[in-house]
Length: 242
Image (cartoon, rainbow, N blue to C red):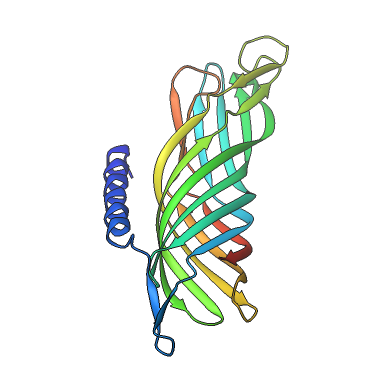
């Protein structure tokens, strides 16, 4: 997806979330026929736990001499989120997510074909907001799914090279990229298994996809390049309703 198309999709998703939020912002109540009173829906859910990240991204940067190959693989992290249940069907969820993905940087110096492999980690912090449609919410299970928006911030990446890989001398050289941020879209589907008679505690999991891209200045030459991460994240954790 091009940058222009991503911006159009992000604006459209923002508009849809705003319309859904303003049209359902009033607190929903359910009637108790016996007492002729209204009982408010338990409308907040706290979720927290662990995240496993599955992604694959790579790029090749041409340098003089040699080149740089960057490969990013899976990783893990932590998450916490709050969901405000606006109606029995619809909820608005805000979350914080911190992950680190394994990164391997390989450098080659001209005709020498000298390779130096550096393992590093690409750290990503995300602030997410999403609409959850609760398709099944029974006494024992709550299944939900919906779209989300994410603000992702990436930390800078450092790499080392020796034996005249970049600066044409024999000393170790460290090169660091700048940090990067983006606003992007995604989707999430999850399930909570409710525990106890009051259904306050739960255990569950979710599957999240993000159309994420890490843009960084080339490690050893002027200019910029990008890696499509597009992570699929499996979350498992505990929930509490109040």
